[in-house]
Amino acid sequence: MDTRLATTNIRIQQWAAVFKSKAESGLTVDEYCDKNGITRNAYYYWLRRARIAALENTQTTFVELKAPETEAFPQAPTAIHSFIPQLTIEKNGLVIGVNSNTTKELLALALEVVSYV
Image (cartoon, rainbow, N blue to C red; front, side):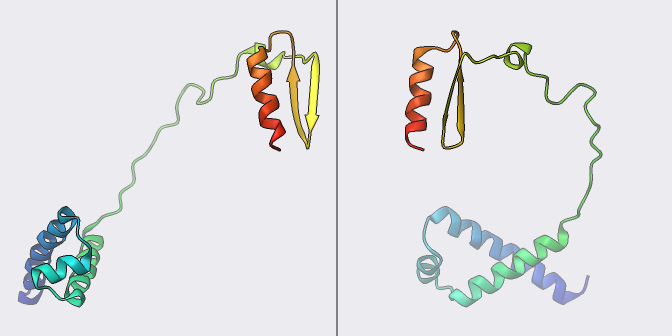
């Protein structure tokens, strides 16, 4: 490792402590920089350098995922598929099917929602 790279890495580590301190302070960048005698340009310069270094050190890896042996989305119960409405209400392209098992509360809620369409 050459001297320049080593120096840059040390500075990035020092600035990482500054970035952490700023995040924990709850101050804006301008407020934090004014309070700690840091120029705004230096802060953003080293933030950019730290991000670039972090991206360079990140390795992309892939993990093989096996397909599940069981069905990912189980079939709905047959009762839903065999629903036969005794009454159909249609408004603005919305269709509501109602049968004797539909509760009054559910029907009232559905009608209220449809009234806003």
